[in-house]
Length: 483
Length: 102
Image (cartoon, rainbow over all chains, first blue to last red; front, top):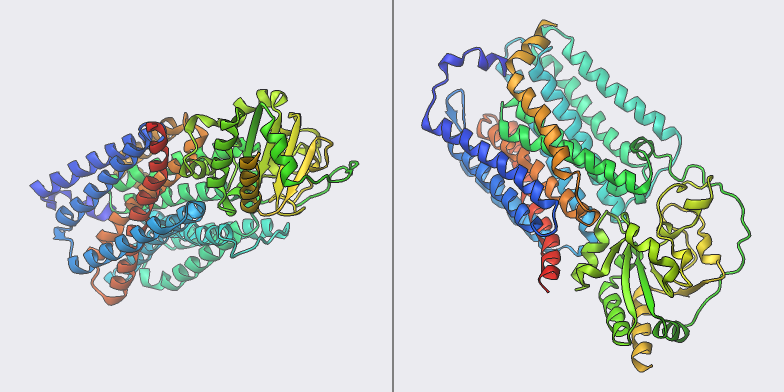
């Protein structure tokens, strides 16, 4: 960008130029307001639409008025074809996907943005190479290109792996060596940037192979960055990759001196980082801890007296519930997987008809994304006021007759409170063990995502109801109706 | 050293924007309730789709076929990010709104 700016007097100021910049300012304001409105339940939907209008405006203005060295945007036919293609695919996929698959979809779209950022960097470098002139490699422009390439590629590859993991297509690789490998990759990538930028004034063409190797290493790093991170931490990773993509987009802003890209990118970069930290806080883990992937590494733990697991029949459960005063449902990802949120709502309705007070206690990280449970239950028409956040639900636990844990595990594991050797020690939990009775609906005795034993299941107050959450709930509803 | 200073001087406005945007991003979302984390993440995800502008610029000035192909791909990816992101967010939020009405 330096070179162009030194010829400022050659740039002509036209109505189109002014319109473009004004559009960018308006778009930036819409992004900021959109994001602000997205953080309040009442205005959230409007905020999203405002941000989308801002985006549309920025895109339209770029297509119509953007000039580079006096040249307007060419290849319009191809660009519009690409936009139409992307719109159709994006729209269809976004409309068709099930609500349970929402987290992986966000990850997928995030990866697309990262990929676009990386491609832009590659094309810009090739463009420099084709000019056939020696260029100073130690420029800010080069730094923006290289950082955009590196961050964009890591975000793209990482998001694809996160998508695969959430979709249960890819397993974890948990090995302590991974953390050293990852630190190694990071150092190598920084080494590449330093190497390229300290070449002095040379023909960029000679650096093209180096750039391609760097691109490939960045992709591999993205994969190995996400591989060791456990599924329970995926939301944090997606949020982190989301802010990465924001920064990669902002690099494009530096590249083209484009304020809309700069504001939008950095805004998401910083908001994404804060969101990541908020999520980490909800799990009482440091970001470093999540990235290094220390989770599940030492699955030791004190060997407590386990006692036997006590099962309960459907009819006993129905009777127990029907004659309770207060029932609290704790949903987890198992509920989402079984697609049982509608049945859950039906259970709640029948119990309410019988005069039982029913509410849902939502752990901040229940499901695979913070707020994921709320989205799912909202889909099933569960009233907004019935969803109680963990901190408000806990004081009421000793007064609760029956807690029904549906497909949740780690978020009700008392080890988080009393076993300092547990990997989840210190994570806030829903204190289900304080309730008078606990019923756990579970497919089997398998462990939760953190792969640690849950002593709640062996408590004297706990009864297990084995089976698929959907079947169990269906039978329970039928049983309750006949009572 | 000189080139660093030159970069700083030439891009001082951009650097101001970056710094202020960082604070703005933190300020704007630090009081968000946990239930909105997913839609907010998704909405922010759509906003960084602004990278599509870069893709359009690059494609708009592409001369050779390699740049054309990569640029076309970049525009498609960027559009997917934007459109998919906003539509998914809207779908999530639609459910919340339906609840608030009743």
